[in-house]
Length: 87
Image (tube, rainbow, N blue to C red):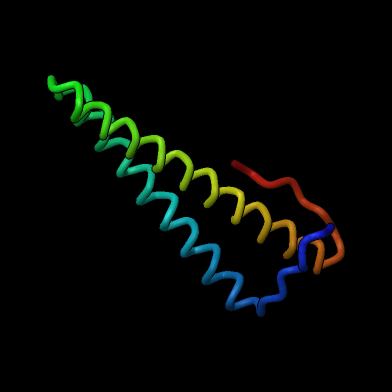
């Protein structure tokens, strides 16, 4: 079962990549903030909640990066060649 090809105009692709890049930055900033909160927290239940939120952020970050890679691959394939995706 293959995935349906992504079809976007050049401007839509650029907007999507910018949006995904912005989302990635926001998630990384939130993760950094949570790390600092965890270091300063002394109550175990709060730390546990922060760790769950950090895990959710990590999951969102991975999803965002996968979407960026898929969009990049679809763009490369539609142009007739495959490029390496920088991380």
